Image 1 (cartoon, rainbow, N blue to C red):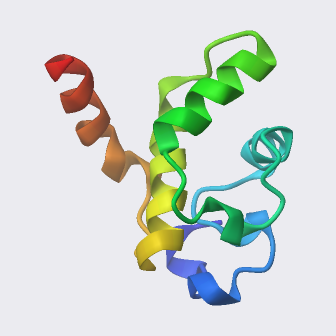
Image 2 (image 1 turned 180 degrees about the vertical axis):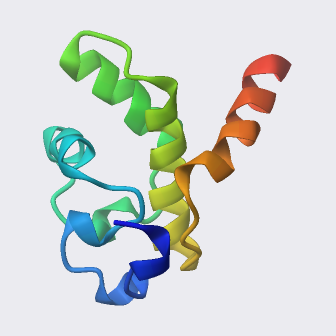
Length: 97
């Protein structure tokens, strides 16, 4: 869903209510055992990304990590931003590592 149309986190009742989530990432979240938005509170986006790679047998596109950062932040803070807002942060962390 486009971040500007997301309901407040406490009203998010399905994965498609989350910012930046479409059918493919919804399927990825379901594969991870995430069935409801509330299950994302307190999660580590990097860990979700790594687990998805293990489960699918291939590294997901790095932008998936940005989406995971966006949805975890949304559920923890209520801030809904486009996934590309998190790209610079990811790249800075990778460069520092």
